[in-house]
Image 1 (cartoon, rainbow, N blue to C red):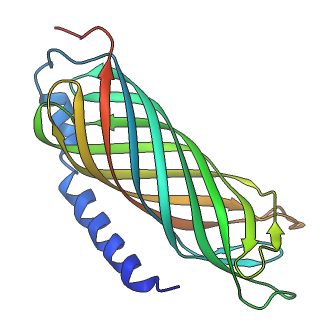
Image 2 (image 1 turned 120 degrees about the horizontal axis):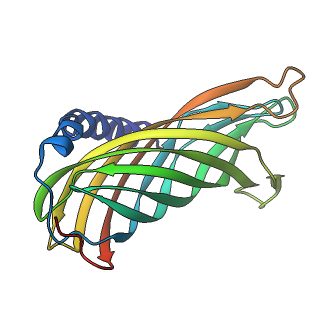
Amino acid sequence: MQRDPLRRLVSGITIFSLVAAAPVAAQILERPAARGEPRLFISAAAGVLDIATIGDADATLDFGTGFVYRASVEHSLGRGSAIGVAAARSRIPLRASSDVLERVDAHATVTSIMASFRGGGGVGFHQVFLVQAGALRFTDIEADDDNTVISRGGSTDFAFSIGGGFGYGVNARLTIGLVQELGLILHRTEGSSNNSSNSAQQRITRIGASYGFGTERRR
């Protein structure tokens, strides 16, 4: 897996976007009340997911970079901000190694469901700020060579992330944008006698679109 160049690229873009989007939280409070904001937003996005190495009781999982698909439903709070729920799924490459396995190339399914807060919006170009937290799960770890199942089930871990980026509001309802997320996975070590855990960083780069529905909010 040729992961290092892509990881460096994703890391650099993530840092740039988070720094650029830092003033958004203050702008949310300063902006005048927006007119014509839909009450409900539905969005879809696709991008790349990169996860650092995770150590488990039985194996070490050295993850690569894979495609991720995300969908969300948000309720408008006005002034370009919203709260909602987001779900994501990825089939990501990895190398698994343990006392009985010797660096097996494999793939795993990564799914998540998160509660989210988004700030920034409106017609034209704007910055976006995102905070989300929820549950993440690794399942269906299968070897690439012969599709041998290394692990069918998996643990449910707590994960959270912050993100930033840029969007363009085509009109009051339709927005397209690029978002970078930097997050942390608190992985529960299965089979450990002391129920220990370890953490791993995750980075997501995604592009998507959202569309607003419902009665427009006017203030």
